[in-house]
Amino acid sequence: MVSAVLYLRVSSLSQVDGFGLDVQEKACRAYAKAHGLRIVATFRDEGVSGTLDAAQRDGLMSALTRLQDGDADALLVARLDRLARTLTVQEAVLAQAWKHNRAVHSADVGEVMQDDPDDPMRTAMRQMAGVFAQLDRGMVVKRMRDGRKAKAAAGGRSVGPAPYGYIARDGGLYPVPEEQDALARMNELRAAGDTMSTIAGVLATEGHPTKRGGRWTSPVVSRILSRPPVPAHQIIDPTKDNRERTRAT
Image (cartoon, rainbow, N blue to C red; front, top):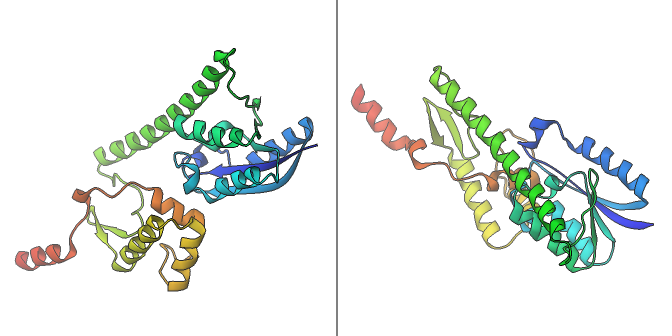
């Protein structure tokens, strides 16, 4: 039997369509049984965006390393959009697997065949799937953004929960010093090339707080680092705010 590593991924966006880890794993195991694949390892990225490249995903990097080391013959995913939500990332991940003569299987469509100069349609169809995965994510993001705008127009709060490092108050975001220290430490470690798991371990050892008092894990770190920077106009300087309140009284 062909040995395979199973890769599963969910992000906050993928929760919307109900395609969770358990659903993915069930589909992959059914495919493996039907097509003679023997799953030798399972790797997960939880709460990790499919727009991130492989180097920023501990689970995917572990799966690709097993392929590179010859511990498995194939990579199995439930759908190609579990590998990537952008075309460029999809093609880069596939190229990395194929470079080591490993196969890639998607439970919904079968084996993802390598490029063939005599069959350009094969490449075009695969890349079109990547384009539509990217489009689908963009549409989900747009619907969420439109929902926030509609809520703001109705007089409600137009943004979701405050991102790590900030607390929401009076329509703005106030920096939380302890979380800002942790953010700086995360970025410092990431710039040094440390993995998400290593960063999570350092934050836990050094006693940095999480947002809700839970433990540091690689998905939590990855989620925080993958978020875009908070726009400067949304951040309220507490010292300036205090001075203005004093003058007002």
